[in-house]
Length: 475
Ligand SMILES: Cc1ncc(COP(=O)(O)O)c(C=O)c1O
Image (cartoon, rainbow, N blue to C red; front, side, top):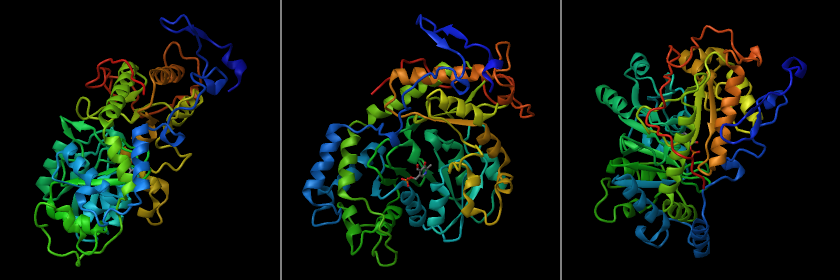
Protein backbone atom coordinates (compact mmCIF):
# COMPACT_ATOMS: atom_id res chain seq x y z
CA UNK A 1 0.00 0.00 0.00
CA UNK A 2 1.06 3.54 -0.78
CA UNK A 3 2.49 5.17 2.34
CA UNK A 4 1.26 8.61 1.29
CA UNK A 5 -2.32 7.42 1.40
CA UNK A 6 -1.82 6.00 4.85
CA UNK A 7 -0.55 9.25 6.27
CA UNK A 8 2.05 9.55 8.99
CA UNK A 9 2.72 6.82 11.51
CA UNK A 10 0.26 6.95 14.37
CA UNK A 11 1.79 6.72 17.78
CA UNK A 12 0.02 5.85 21.01
CA UNK A 13 1.18 5.12 24.51
CA UNK A 14 1.20 1.59 25.82
CA UNK A 15 -1.06 1.38 28.83
CA UNK A 16 0.94 1.81 32.01
CA UNK A 17 4.29 1.77 30.24
CA UNK A 18 4.89 5.34 29.24
CA UNK A 19 6.37 3.79 26.08
CA UNK A 20 5.17 4.92 22.65
CA UNK A 21 4.11 2.38 20.03
CA UNK A 22 3.86 2.78 16.28
CA UNK A 23 0.34 1.65 15.37
CA UNK A 24 1.11 1.56 11.65
CA UNK A 25 1.36 -2.07 10.64
CA UNK A 26 4.78 -3.49 9.85
CA UNK A 27 3.30 -4.78 6.61
CA UNK A 28 2.85 -1.11 5.71
CA UNK A 29 6.25 0.04 6.88
CA UNK A 30 5.53 0.60 10.56
CA UNK A 31 7.76 -0.69 13.36
CA UNK A 32 7.12 -4.39 14.08
CA UNK A 33 6.01 -5.44 17.56
CA UNK A 34 9.07 -7.72 17.83
CA UNK A 35 12.30 -8.09 15.89
CA UNK A 36 13.61 -11.42 17.13
CA UNK A 37 12.42 -14.75 15.69
CA UNK A 38 9.26 -16.27 17.17
CA UNK A 39 10.43 -19.29 19.25
CA UNK A 40 9.49 -22.63 17.68
CA UNK A 41 10.91 -26.13 17.99
CA UNK A 42 12.41 -26.09 14.51
CA UNK A 43 14.51 -23.09 15.54
CA UNK A 44 15.66 -24.96 18.65
CA UNK A 45 13.09 -23.67 21.18
CA UNK A 46 12.69 -27.01 22.96
CA UNK A 47 12.31 -28.10 26.55
CA UNK A 48 15.38 -30.28 27.00
CA UNK A 49 17.38 -29.98 30.21
CA UNK A 50 20.99 -31.00 31.01
CA UNK A 51 19.71 -34.06 32.94
CA UNK A 52 17.94 -35.22 29.79
CA UNK A 53 21.08 -34.81 27.68
CA UNK A 54 23.08 -36.75 30.25
CA UNK A 55 20.57 -39.61 30.23
CA UNK A 56 20.87 -39.89 26.44
CA UNK A 57 24.67 -39.79 26.63
CA UNK A 58 24.66 -42.54 29.26
CA UNK A 59 22.55 -44.68 26.93
CA UNK A 60 24.92 -44.01 24.03
CA UNK A 61 27.90 -44.99 26.19
CA UNK A 62 26.21 -48.23 27.27
CA UNK A 63 26.44 -49.51 23.67
CA UNK A 64 23.15 -51.31 24.29
CA UNK A 65 20.82 -49.71 21.78
CA UNK A 66 18.45 -52.57 20.98
CA UNK A 67 15.49 -52.89 23.31
CA UNK A 68 15.24 -56.68 22.93
CA UNK A 69 18.84 -57.62 23.80
CA UNK A 70 19.96 -59.96 26.60
CA UNK A 71 18.38 -57.82 29.35
CA UNK A 72 14.94 -58.32 30.82
CA UNK A 73 12.17 -55.85 29.98
CA UNK A 74 12.53 -54.15 33.37
CA UNK A 75 16.23 -53.52 32.83
CA UNK A 76 15.85 -51.68 29.54
CA UNK A 77 15.22 -47.99 28.96
CA UNK A 78 12.25 -48.83 26.71
CA UNK A 79 10.77 -51.17 29.31
CA UNK A 80 11.14 -48.63 32.10
CA UNK A 81 9.75 -45.85 29.94
CA UNK A 82 6.70 -48.02 29.22
CA UNK A 83 6.24 -48.72 32.94
CA UNK A 84 6.37 -45.00 33.65
CA UNK A 85 3.87 -44.30 30.89
CA UNK A 86 1.46 -46.84 32.39
CA UNK A 87 1.71 -45.11 35.73
CA UNK A 88 1.33 -41.65 34.21
CA UNK A 89 -1.70 -42.50 32.05
CA UNK A 90 -3.19 -45.06 34.42
CA UNK A 91 -3.38 -47.66 31.63
CA UNK A 92 -2.58 -51.36 31.84
CA UNK A 93 -0.20 -51.23 28.89
CA UNK A 94 2.07 -48.92 26.94
CA UNK A 95 4.29 -49.65 23.95
CA UNK A 96 7.07 -47.32 22.80
CA UNK A 97 7.35 -47.17 19.00
CA UNK A 98 9.03 -45.31 16.18
CA UNK A 99 6.46 -42.50 15.63
CA UNK A 100 2.94 -41.26 16.28
CA UNK A 101 1.91 -42.41 12.81
CA UNK A 102 3.06 -45.97 13.46
CA UNK A 103 1.37 -45.94 16.89
CA UNK A 104 -1.92 -45.01 15.19
CA UNK A 105 -1.56 -47.63 12.46
CA UNK A 106 -0.62 -50.30 15.02
CA UNK A 107 -3.72 -49.52 17.10
CA UNK A 108 -6.00 -50.06 14.09
CA UNK A 109 -4.18 -53.17 12.88
CA UNK A 110 -3.90 -54.74 16.33
CA UNK A 111 -7.62 -54.16 16.97
CA UNK A 112 -8.29 -56.54 14.09
CA UNK A 113 -10.10 -54.01 11.89
CA UNK A 114 -10.50 -55.81 8.53
CA UNK A 115 -8.38 -54.43 5.70
CA UNK A 116 -10.43 -52.28 3.33
CA UNK A 117 -12.73 -50.96 6.10
CA UNK A 118 -13.63 -47.31 6.37
CA UNK A 119 -12.32 -45.44 9.42
CA UNK A 120 -13.94 -42.07 10.15
CA UNK A 121 -11.69 -39.15 11.05
CA UNK A 122 -12.07 -35.35 11.13
CA UNK A 123 -11.31 -33.17 8.11
CA UNK A 124 -9.06 -30.99 10.25
CA UNK A 125 -6.01 -32.95 11.34
CA UNK A 126 -2.40 -33.47 10.35
CA UNK A 127 -1.96 -35.58 7.21
CA UNK A 128 -0.47 -38.34 9.38
CA UNK A 129 -3.97 -39.28 10.63
CA UNK A 130 -5.43 -40.37 7.27
CA UNK A 131 -1.97 -41.67 6.32
CA UNK A 132 -1.96 -44.00 9.35
CA UNK A 133 -5.40 -45.29 8.34
CA UNK A 134 -4.00 -46.04 4.88
CA UNK A 135 -0.93 -47.68 6.45
CA UNK A 136 -3.29 -49.97 8.39
CA UNK A 137 -4.88 -51.07 5.10
CA UNK A 138 -8.09 -49.08 5.61
CA UNK A 139 -9.68 -46.03 3.97
CA UNK A 140 -10.26 -42.68 5.72
CA UNK A 141 -13.81 -41.31 5.71
CA UNK A 142 -13.61 -37.59 6.36
CA UNK A 143 -16.05 -35.81 8.63
CA UNK A 144 -16.81 -32.09 8.98
CA UNK A 145 -15.54 -30.08 11.93
CA UNK A 146 -17.56 -27.35 13.65
CA UNK A 147 -16.70 -23.67 14.05
CA UNK A 148 -14.32 -24.55 16.90
CA UNK A 149 -12.65 -27.14 14.69
CA UNK A 150 -13.97 -30.12 16.69
CA UNK A 151 -15.30 -33.20 14.90
CA UNK A 152 -18.99 -32.64 14.08
CA UNK A 153 -20.94 -35.62 15.43
CA UNK A 154 -24.13 -34.75 13.54
CA UNK A 155 -22.17 -34.82 10.29
CA UNK A 156 -20.61 -38.14 11.32
CA UNK A 157 -24.10 -39.54 11.87
CA UNK A 158 -25.20 -38.16 8.53
CA UNK A 159 -22.30 -39.79 6.66
CA UNK A 160 -22.50 -43.10 8.54
CA UNK A 161 -22.39 -46.37 6.58
CA UNK A 162 -22.00 -49.97 7.82
CA UNK A 163 -18.54 -50.07 6.17
CA UNK A 164 -17.22 -47.74 8.89
CA UNK A 165 -15.48 -50.02 11.38
CA UNK A 166 -13.88 -47.47 13.67
CA UNK A 167 -13.70 -43.78 14.60
CA UNK A 168 -10.31 -42.13 14.80
CA UNK A 169 -10.79 -39.06 16.98
CA UNK A 170 -8.11 -36.35 16.92
CA UNK A 171 -7.26 -33.88 19.70
CA UNK A 172 -6.02 -31.50 17.07
CA UNK A 173 -3.57 -28.75 18.00
CA UNK A 174 -3.91 -29.94 21.59
CA UNK A 175 -7.67 -29.33 21.97
CA UNK A 176 -9.71 -32.22 23.37
CA UNK A 177 -12.42 -33.65 21.17
CA UNK A 178 -15.82 -34.18 22.81
CA UNK A 179 -14.98 -37.69 24.03
CA UNK A 180 -18.18 -38.21 25.98
CA UNK A 181 -20.39 -37.61 22.95
CA UNK A 182 -18.07 -39.45 20.56
CA UNK A 183 -17.69 -42.58 22.69
CA UNK A 184 -21.49 -42.65 23.23
CA UNK A 185 -22.02 -42.42 19.49
CA UNK A 186 -19.41 -45.14 18.80
CA UNK A 187 -21.13 -47.43 21.31
CA UNK A 188 -24.43 -46.84 19.57
CA UNK A 189 -22.81 -47.82 16.25
CA UNK A 190 -20.87 -50.73 17.78
CA UNK A 191 -17.41 -49.62 16.65
CA UNK A 192 -14.22 -48.83 18.59
CA UNK A 193 -12.79 -45.35 19.12
CA UNK A 194 -9.09 -44.77 18.56
CA UNK A 195 -7.54 -41.54 19.80
CA UNK A 196 -4.97 -39.54 17.92
CA UNK A 197 -3.62 -37.82 21.02
CA UNK A 198 -0.39 -36.94 19.24
CA UNK A 199 -0.76 -33.17 19.66
CA UNK A 200 -2.18 -33.39 23.21
CA UNK A 201 0.28 -35.43 25.26
CA UNK A 202 -0.56 -34.73 28.91
CA UNK A 203 -3.69 -32.64 28.28
CA UNK A 204 -6.86 -33.58 30.14
CA UNK A 205 -10.62 -33.56 29.72
CA UNK A 206 -12.55 -33.43 33.02
CA UNK A 207 -9.49 -34.64 34.92
CA UNK A 208 -8.82 -37.61 32.63
CA UNK A 209 -5.81 -37.78 30.32
CA UNK A 210 -6.56 -37.55 26.61
CA UNK A 211 -5.65 -40.79 24.88
CA UNK A 212 -7.25 -42.93 27.62
CA UNK A 213 -10.90 -42.64 26.58
CA UNK A 214 -10.88 -44.91 23.53
CA UNK A 215 -9.78 -48.48 22.90
CA UNK A 216 -6.24 -47.21 22.36
CA UNK A 217 -4.50 -43.84 22.36
CA UNK A 218 -1.58 -42.93 20.09
CA UNK A 219 1.06 -40.34 20.96
CA UNK A 220 4.12 -38.86 19.30
CA UNK A 221 7.45 -37.89 20.80
CA UNK A 222 8.56 -35.97 17.72
CA UNK A 223 10.39 -32.73 18.36
CA UNK A 224 7.48 -30.31 18.94
CA UNK A 225 5.53 -32.62 21.28
CA UNK A 226 5.33 -32.55 25.09
CA UNK A 227 8.01 -35.27 25.21
CA UNK A 228 10.70 -34.86 22.57
CA UNK A 229 13.26 -37.36 21.32
CA UNK A 230 13.42 -36.16 17.72
CA UNK A 231 11.20 -38.89 16.30
CA UNK A 232 9.19 -41.48 18.23
CA UNK A 233 5.84 -42.32 19.76
CA UNK A 234 3.86 -44.73 21.89
CA UNK A 235 0.56 -46.48 22.29
CA UNK A 236 -1.48 -46.66 25.53
CA UNK A 237 -4.30 -49.15 26.07
CA UNK A 238 -6.07 -51.33 28.61
CA UNK A 239 -6.79 -54.03 26.03
CA UNK A 240 -4.28 -56.83 26.57
CA UNK A 241 -4.97 -58.65 23.30
CA UNK A 242 -4.66 -55.45 21.25
CA UNK A 243 -1.46 -54.66 23.13
CA UNK A 244 0.09 -58.11 22.59
CA UNK A 245 -0.71 -57.96 18.88
CA UNK A 246 0.69 -54.43 18.62
CA UNK A 247 3.91 -55.57 20.32
CA UNK A 248 4.35 -58.35 17.74
CA UNK A 249 3.43 -56.11 14.79
CA UNK A 250 5.89 -53.46 16.02
CA UNK A 251 8.73 -55.96 15.63
CA UNK A 252 9.09 -58.18 18.74
CA UNK A 253 10.15 -61.33 16.95
CA UNK A 254 10.91 -64.89 18.09
CA UNK A 255 8.80 -64.80 21.22
CA UNK A 256 10.08 -61.46 22.51
CA UNK A 257 6.50 -60.23 22.94
CA UNK A 258 6.39 -62.41 26.09
CA UNK A 259 8.79 -60.00 27.80
CA UNK A 260 5.99 -57.42 27.87
CA UNK A 261 4.03 -59.72 30.20
CA UNK A 262 6.62 -60.31 32.96
CA UNK A 263 3.97 -61.21 35.53
CA UNK A 264 2.03 -63.85 33.61
CA UNK A 265 1.03 -65.47 30.36
CA UNK A 266 0.41 -63.24 27.34
CA UNK A 267 -3.14 -63.39 25.95
CA UNK A 268 -1.93 -64.60 22.54
CA UNK A 269 -0.11 -67.88 22.04
CA UNK A 270 2.10 -67.20 19.05
CA UNK A 271 3.68 -64.36 17.10
CA UNK A 272 3.83 -66.29 13.86
CA UNK A 273 0.48 -65.29 12.44
CA UNK A 274 1.24 -61.56 12.26
CA UNK A 275 3.66 -59.60 10.06
CA UNK A 276 6.55 -57.81 11.80
CA UNK A 277 6.88 -54.20 10.77
CA UNK A 278 9.93 -52.90 12.66
CA UNK A 279 8.21 -49.94 14.29
CA UNK A 280 10.34 -50.36 17.43
CA UNK A 281 11.83 -47.65 19.61
CA UNK A 282 15.52 -47.74 20.53
CA UNK A 283 17.24 -47.38 23.89
CA UNK A 284 18.81 -43.98 23.28
CA UNK A 285 15.54 -42.24 22.58
CA UNK A 286 13.80 -44.06 25.44
CA UNK A 287 16.50 -42.86 27.85
CA UNK A 288 15.99 -39.26 26.73
CA UNK A 289 12.22 -39.56 27.09
CA UNK A 290 12.41 -41.16 30.54
CA UNK A 291 14.50 -38.26 31.76
CA UNK A 292 12.11 -35.71 30.23
CA UNK A 293 9.16 -37.30 32.01
CA UNK A 294 10.47 -35.91 35.29
CA UNK A 295 9.79 -32.37 34.04
CA UNK A 296 6.67 -33.12 31.98
CA UNK A 297 4.28 -31.60 34.58
CA UNK A 298 6.29 -28.37 34.57
CA UNK A 299 6.24 -28.20 30.80
CA UNK A 300 2.49 -28.86 30.70
CA UNK A 301 1.90 -26.15 33.25
CA UNK A 302 3.79 -23.65 31.09
CA UNK A 303 1.91 -24.58 27.95
CA UNK A 304 -1.40 -24.28 29.75
CA UNK A 305 -0.63 -21.15 31.66
CA UNK A 306 0.71 -19.22 28.68
CA UNK A 307 -2.22 -20.24 26.50
CA UNK A 308 -4.69 -19.19 29.20
CA UNK A 309 -2.91 -15.87 29.59
CA UNK A 310 -2.97 -15.08 25.86
CA UNK A 311 -6.55 -16.30 25.33
CA UNK A 312 -7.82 -14.42 28.34
CA UNK A 313 -6.14 -11.18 27.28
CA UNK A 314 -7.67 -11.43 23.81
CA UNK A 315 -11.07 -12.80 24.80
CA UNK A 316 -12.73 -9.39 24.65
CA UNK A 317 -11.47 -8.66 21.13
CA UNK A 318 -14.62 -8.79 19.06
CA UNK A 319 -12.82 -9.02 15.72
CA UNK A 320 -11.42 -12.50 16.34
CA UNK A 321 -13.25 -15.72 17.23
CA UNK A 322 -10.91 -17.67 19.50
CA UNK A 323 -11.20 -21.45 19.20
CA UNK A 324 -13.18 -22.65 22.21
CA UNK A 325 -12.46 -25.87 24.14
CA UNK A 326 -15.22 -28.47 24.62
CA UNK A 327 -14.77 -28.05 28.40
CA UNK A 328 -13.00 -25.38 30.44
CA UNK A 329 -9.26 -25.97 30.28
CA UNK A 330 -9.49 -29.01 27.96
CA UNK A 331 -6.44 -28.17 25.89
CA UNK A 332 -2.67 -28.49 25.96
CA UNK A 333 -1.86 -24.94 24.83
CA UNK A 334 0.62 -25.66 22.04
CA UNK A 335 -1.15 -23.43 19.51
CA UNK A 336 -3.37 -20.36 19.50
CA UNK A 337 -6.02 -20.63 16.83
CA UNK A 338 -8.65 -18.05 16.04
CA UNK A 339 -10.89 -17.27 13.12
CA UNK A 340 -11.35 -13.87 11.51
CA UNK A 341 -14.68 -14.20 9.72
CA UNK A 342 -15.26 -11.41 7.26
CA UNK A 343 -11.57 -10.57 7.09
CA UNK A 344 -8.93 -11.89 4.70
CA UNK A 345 -7.28 -14.42 7.05
CA UNK A 346 -4.31 -14.86 4.72
CA UNK A 347 -3.63 -11.15 4.93
CA UNK A 348 -4.14 -11.22 8.72
CA UNK A 349 -1.60 -14.04 9.14
CA UNK A 350 0.90 -12.30 6.86
CA UNK A 351 0.48 -9.08 8.80
CA UNK A 352 1.16 -10.96 12.06
CA UNK A 353 4.30 -12.51 10.56
CA UNK A 354 5.52 -9.05 9.66
CA UNK A 355 4.91 -7.99 13.26
CA UNK A 356 7.37 -10.74 14.25
CA UNK A 357 5.00 -13.58 15.20
CA UNK A 358 4.88 -16.85 13.24
CA UNK A 359 1.31 -17.27 12.00
CA UNK A 360 -0.35 -19.22 9.24
CA UNK A 361 -3.75 -18.96 7.68
CA UNK A 362 -4.65 -22.66 7.83
CA UNK A 363 -6.70 -22.66 4.64
CA UNK A 364 -4.39 -20.37 2.66
CA UNK A 365 -4.23 -21.09 -1.05
CA UNK A 366 -0.62 -19.91 -1.04
CA UNK A 367 0.96 -22.83 0.75
CA UNK A 368 0.47 -26.58 0.96
CA UNK A 369 -0.38 -26.85 4.64
CA UNK A 370 -0.89 -30.58 5.27
CA UNK A 371 -3.35 -29.83 8.09
CA UNK A 372 -6.02 -29.05 5.50
CA UNK A 373 -7.73 -31.94 3.80
CA UNK A 374 -7.68 -30.60 0.25
CA UNK A 375 -3.91 -31.03 0.28
CA UNK A 376 -4.26 -34.79 0.93
CA UNK A 377 -4.39 -35.48 -2.81
CA UNK A 378 -3.48 -39.17 -2.37
CA UNK A 379 -7.04 -39.70 -1.12
CA UNK A 380 -8.95 -38.11 -3.96
CA UNK A 381 -7.82 -39.50 -7.33
CA UNK A 382 -8.21 -36.91 -10.09
CA UNK A 383 -10.25 -34.38 -8.12
CA UNK A 384 -8.88 -30.84 -8.02
CA UNK A 385 -8.74 -28.70 -4.88
CA UNK A 386 -12.15 -27.05 -5.47
CA UNK A 387 -13.87 -30.41 -5.94
CA UNK A 388 -12.21 -31.73 -2.79
CA UNK A 389 -13.19 -28.65 -0.77
CA UNK A 390 -16.82 -29.18 -1.82
CA UNK A 391 -16.82 -32.51 0.05
CA UNK A 392 -16.53 -30.69 3.41
CA UNK A 393 -17.83 -27.15 2.85
CA UNK A 394 -18.03 -26.17 6.53
CA UNK A 395 -14.53 -27.39 7.32
CA UNK A 396 -13.27 -25.55 4.25
CA UNK A 397 -14.88 -22.30 5.37
CA UNK A 398 -13.58 -22.52 8.92
CA UNK A 399 -10.04 -23.40 7.84
CA UNK A 400 -10.01 -20.55 5.34
CA UNK A 401 -10.97 -18.20 8.18
CA UNK A 402 -8.46 -19.62 10.67
CA UNK A 403 -5.13 -18.23 11.83
CA UNK A 404 -2.76 -20.60 13.66
CA UNK A 405 0.06 -19.38 15.92
CA UNK A 406 2.44 -21.97 17.46
CA UNK A 407 2.98 -21.52 21.22
CA UNK A 408 6.22 -23.12 22.34
CA UNK A 409 6.37 -24.03 26.03
CA UNK A 410 9.52 -21.91 26.14
CA UNK A 411 7.61 -18.66 25.51
CA UNK A 412 8.61 -15.95 27.95
CA UNK A 413 6.13 -13.49 29.51
CA UNK A 414 7.47 -10.91 27.06
CA UNK A 415 6.81 -13.23 24.09
CA UNK A 416 3.22 -13.69 25.27
CA UNK A 417 2.71 -9.95 25.68
CA UNK A 418 4.13 -9.29 22.23
CA UNK A 419 1.79 -11.85 20.71
CA UNK A 420 -1.16 -10.16 22.39
CA UNK A 421 -0.02 -6.75 21.17
CA UNK A 422 0.58 -7.98 17.63
CA UNK A 423 -2.88 -9.54 17.35
CA UNK A 424 -4.54 -6.44 18.81
CA UNK A 425 -2.59 -4.21 16.44
CA UNK A 426 -3.50 -6.19 13.31
CA UNK A 427 -7.10 -6.65 14.41
CA UNK A 428 -7.44 -2.91 15.06
CA UNK A 429 -6.17 -2.20 11.57
CA UNK A 430 -8.85 -4.27 9.87
CA UNK A 431 -11.70 -3.44 12.19
CA UNK A 432 -14.69 -1.92 10.49
CA UNK A 433 -15.12 0.54 13.34
CA UNK A 434 -14.61 4.25 13.75
CA UNK A 435 -10.86 3.86 14.19
CA UNK A 436 -10.65 2.06 10.89
CA UNK A 437 -8.23 3.67 8.49
CA UNK A 438 -6.35 0.63 7.23
CA UNK A 439 -6.77 -1.33 4.03
CA UNK A 440 -10.30 -2.03 2.95
CA UNK A 441 -8.91 -4.94 0.93
CA UNK A 442 -8.26 -6.81 4.16
CA UNK A 443 -11.99 -6.83 4.89
CA UNK A 444 -14.02 -9.19 2.76
CA UNK A 445 -17.18 -7.71 1.29
CA UNK A 446 -18.69 -10.90 2.54
CA UNK A 447 -21.79 -12.89 3.15
CA UNK A 448 -20.12 -15.10 5.69
CA UNK A 449 -22.00 -13.83 8.66
CA UNK A 450 -19.25 -11.79 10.27
CA UNK A 451 -20.61 -10.05 13.28
CA UNK A 452 -19.06 -8.76 16.44
CA UNK A 453 -18.76 -11.40 19.10
CA UNK A 454 -22.03 -12.54 20.56
CA UNK A 455 -24.04 -11.46 17.52
CA UNK A 456 -24.16 -14.62 15.52
CA UNK A 457 -20.55 -15.04 14.50
CA UNK A 458 -20.52 -18.34 16.33
CA UNK A 459 -18.23 -16.86 18.94
CA UNK A 460 -19.19 -15.61 22.32
CA UNK A 461 -17.83 -12.36 23.73
CA UNK A 462 -17.46 -13.87 27.18
CA UNK A 463 -13.93 -14.85 28.23
CA UNK A 464 -12.70 -18.16 26.89
CA UNK A 465 -14.16 -20.96 29.00
CA UNK A 466 -12.12 -21.79 32.04
CA UNK A 467 -9.66 -18.99 31.64
CA UNK A 468 -8.58 -16.98 34.58
CA UNK A 469 -6.26 -14.07 33.94
CA UNK A 470 -2.91 -15.46 34.99
CA UNK A 471 0.47 -13.96 34.50
CA UNK A 472 2.49 -15.60 31.71
CA UNK A 473 5.19 -18.08 32.64
CA UNK A 474 8.57 -18.31 30.95
CA UNK A 475 11.11 -21.11 30.90
C1 LIG B 1 -2.64 -34.98 14.67
C2 LIG B 1 -1.35 -35.71 14.38
N1 LIG B 1 -1.39 -37.02 14.19
C3 LIG B 1 -0.26 -37.72 13.91
C4 LIG B 1 0.96 -37.09 13.80
C5 LIG B 1 2.16 -37.89 13.44
O1 LIG B 1 3.11 -38.02 14.42
P1 LIG B 1 4.59 -38.47 14.01
O2 LIG B 1 5.22 -37.32 13.29
O3 LIG B 1 5.28 -38.82 15.26
O4 LIG B 1 4.43 -39.66 13.10
C6 LIG B 1 1.05 -35.71 13.97
C7 LIG B 1 2.35 -35.02 13.87
O5 LIG B 1 2.51 -33.90 14.25
C8 LIG B 1 -0.15 -34.99 14.28
O6 LIG B 1 -0.13 -33.67 14.45
